[in-house]
Structures are given as structure tokens and as C-alpha cells.
Image (tube, rainbow, N blue to C red; front, top):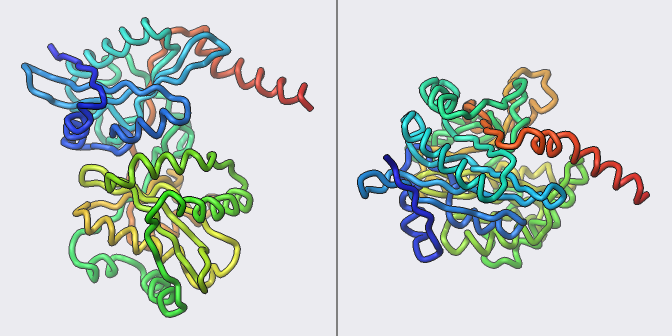
Length: 353
């Protein structure tokens, strides 16, 4: 039997320590990440998992109210942080979530543990607890989190890490320095403004939606002071031309956001920024630097192969996770959420026009 103890602010250090101690600990299960998501409308619930009085893990569950349906949805990002190959434990976690779902009127729960796709024992434990895989196709971006990522071994000396890169990428890093690109670390939340202006340019150029600037300010406020976030800005001729955000937790580091302007791309600021983040990962004794998402299809004719090429140039290698799992508690409302709500939203937009 396991005990699930809901924690409050005074226990955040105990909670983070329990999560960080797990084999596949992820920053999205940290207390601070729950604070970030709370800013954008999610409600975080955080639990310590105990067995015989000893803490053996934890998990952070996020609730998103769906006012139009009078219900909510649950999401456990990159978790739970526990031994998910332990079938008995997974069943009790599932039952705890089900109890909370009854109280909160949750439609479903989604989770996407950051465990390698080869872990059939873990898949079996999840299936035995009623979780069903929702992974579709093999694109890698269908779920909330990317299923396929790139990892870089950053152990050894700087020369060791540079030696794992292609000659061209080493040249580009040196070129940025010779051309006068300077990398600075953001010191205040005001530096987010420089990053966000570049992100707006990137979103327009590459045709994707970006989050509100307040989200990035909250992320900085919640995580930078705890050395869980570092903002890097590449300046050229006194002006910011590229920027990145990296996160760190336990002994792991992640590249999560990148932005660049349309000018001076020939001075290779993005290569210099990656090298700065890699060195930060080394300073923190993170053995692996996570480049995050790539398509699972690594073939040269894939539309996003440029992303793959950029990351493999640094010596990164592909990793595929088990993907997204789900338990549905209210099938009718799940259908309305997945199919009815998008139609309703489109109709409202048409009527407004």
C-alpha cells in the first residue's frame, strides 16, 4: 500500500527533492513549473508518494477548467516521477487520480512519462492500470510534448564535447566569436523583453503562434532565482539578434525556447548560443543536454529535417519516448472536448467576423 500526501508551499523543497531523486526526473514535474502553469490557468496539485513512511516519489497533476462543459481535464507533464515499472504502484497512482477526478469532475487524464520507448515493462504497467496509448503516427509532435528528442552527451572536457560535433559546427562557433557576437546571460525579468521581440519575429517568419509575454516573465520570475532557468541573448554590434531559454532540474538540462531576428544570421549566433547553453549544462554537472523535439522521421526529405541537421551537427543522437497515455472518465464529455469544442470555437470566430 502506498500513501499519497498532498503538499503545500512550505513543503516545496521536500517535494522537489523527491522528484529530483527519480531516474527520469523532469523539470515539468518541479514545484516551480506548477507555478508557471498556474499563471496560465492551470491548477497544480502536488503529491509525495510514501511507502512505509519513506518517500519513494511524487507527481504534479495539473487541472484545466473547461467552463463551457462544466468540467475539467487533468494532465501530468512528463511524469509521474516514480518507478513506473512497478505495476502495483502505477495501479495505486491511477486510483488516486480517479478519486480526484470524481471530486473535480475531470473528463480525462493525460500523462507522458519521459521514459525510453524500449521500456515494455513500463508500458505493461501503464496498460494494466487502465492507461491507453494515444500515440498516433510517427511524426513525434502529435502529443502535448514531443515524443522524439535529441540528446547530447556533455561529459568530459570542452574539447571532448567539441570533438563530438561536426567540423562545420565547430567552425561556426568560432566564427561567431571572430565576428564579434557576444553572449550575455539575462540578469532581470526585463531582459525577457529583448527575447520576446525576437520571438515575435520568429513566430511571424516561421508561421507559428507564440505565448503571451507574461508567460515568459512568470517563467523567469519563478525559475531563474532558483537557478532552474537561464536566458541567453546573442548581441551583435550592440543589438540583440538571437536568444534562447534553457531549463535545469536535478542532473538534467533542456533547451526549451529559441528566437532569432531576420538580420545577421550569417554571423552564426545560434551556434554560439547553443555552445553557451551546453557549457552551462556542463557547469551544472548535467551528463546529458536535451535539445528537445525533432520529428521521429529522420529522413532527409522530411520538411523539418533542417531541425534534425542542426541538432545532430552538435553530436546529438535521437531518443524516442513511450509517448502519451490517457484514461477517460467521461466518454461523452471527452468526445465533446476533442471534437465538439473545436467546432464550437470555429463557429464563434465565424460569427464574430
